[in-house]
Image 1 (cartoon, helix red, strand yellow):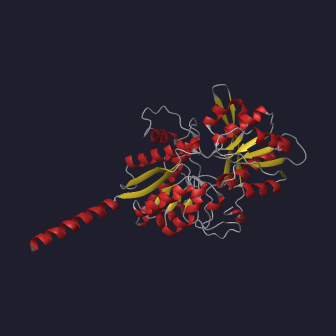
Image 2: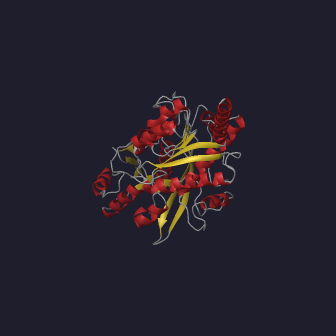
Amino acid sequence: MRKSIILGSLLVASLAFAGSTLAADTIPVGHLAAYTGPTSGVGIPFGNGIDDALAYINKHGGINGKQIKYKTVDYSYNAPRAVATYKKWMSSLKPVAIQGWGTADTEALVKFIAKDKVTYISASYSGHLTDPTGKGPKSKSAAPYNFFYGPSYSDACRGLVQWAADDWKAKGKSGKPKFIHMGDNHPYPNAPKAACAAYAKELGFEVEPSIVYSLKPADAKAQCLSLKDSGADYAYLANTSSSNISLLKSCSTVGVKTQFLTNIWGWDENSIKATGAAGDGIAWVVGAATWEDDAPGMKTLREVSKMSDPSGKKPRMLHYIRGVCGTFLMKEAMLKADAMGAITGENIKKGFESMKNFVPAGLEGVCSPSTWTAEDHRGMNLVNVYTSKYNGGDFKMTKLATVEVPRRPEWLGW
C-alpha cells in the first residue's frame, strides 16, 4: 500500500514536471483577427501576414528554441466579442502577448492588459494608445503595454495635411485651402479627427464641418454632394478601403474635384483595381515596402509568404507586409525578453522600449525603423505619402514624399 502511494506521488510529480517543461518551452500568444465584418477587406491580408510570420518563426527555431503557441480568433470587428475572447484567453491560454486589431476593442482593453501585464501589438494606430504614462495633456488614459508598427492615425493625418500644404503652394494657389474630415462616427475614424483638424488650422487651412459616411460599403452620393457644396480642396477619408471605394465611385458621378487623402487602411492594391480611374490621384499613407520593391529583406518576406503559398507566386498586399513587420518586431522583443531571463509580458514591453531606429533582422528595407521608450510609444513619425493611377487592368503606385511630423510632447496620446 505504501509503495503504491509512493509510486503514485512520483507519477504526479513527473507529470507536473513534464507540464512545467512544456510550458517553459512554449510562448502563449493570442491573435485577434477580423476575417469577417466591415473591416475584413484589410483585416484578411493583415491577419494572413501575422499567421504566416508566426508559422515561419516557429519553423525556424521559434524564440531561442521555444515555440510560439498561438490561437487565432476571428472576432468580426465586434468589440464586446474581443473583450470576451480576451477574458477567455486569460483563464486558459494565458498569453504574454497579443496581436490585436481594431481601435474600439483595443481601447476597451487598455486597462485590462495593463493590469494583467500583457504586451499588446495592435493593428489600431490610434494616437490614444501612444502614451504609456497617461501624462499627455490630452491622453485618454495610460497605455503602458500598447504598441503598434507605423505612425499613429493622428501623425499620419498630420503628415498628409503637411503634404497638402506643400501641394497647395506647388500648384501656385493663393488664399486658404479648405480641409474636411470624412468618416463614420466610430472610434477608428474619429481617432485622428480633432488632432488633425487642429494641425490643419495651424498650417493655414480653413477646416470645414466633417461629413459622416458608413464603414460599410454603400452609395454615398448624398455625402459627395455635401462635399461638393463645401468647396473643400482636400478631404481626409478616415474609413477603411471597402467604404472608400464606394465613396470615390459615388463622388466621380457627381463631379467632385477634391484632392482625396486617406489613412494606412484606406487604400491598397485591391482598392485601386476596384475603383478604377475614379481613384486616380488619391494620396495615402504606406507603412512598409511594396511587394514589387527591391530591398534586401524581400528575400525573407517571400519565404514567410510561402508558409501559406508554397508556390511563392501570390503577390502580397501592403497590409500583409505590415502584419509581418509587426510580428517580427514582437519576435525581436521576445528575444530581448529571453535575454533578461524570462519571456513575460513585462519583459517583452521592456524589449520594445529598448528599440531605437530598429528594423527586425532579415527585413531590412522592408520594415521602416521604429523607436519606443518607456515614456513615448509613438514608434514612428515619418509618413510615406503615395499616390496611385489605374491603367485599365493594371495600376501604378508612386511615392510622393516622406514627411517628418514633429514629435511634440503635447501631442503624446492624441
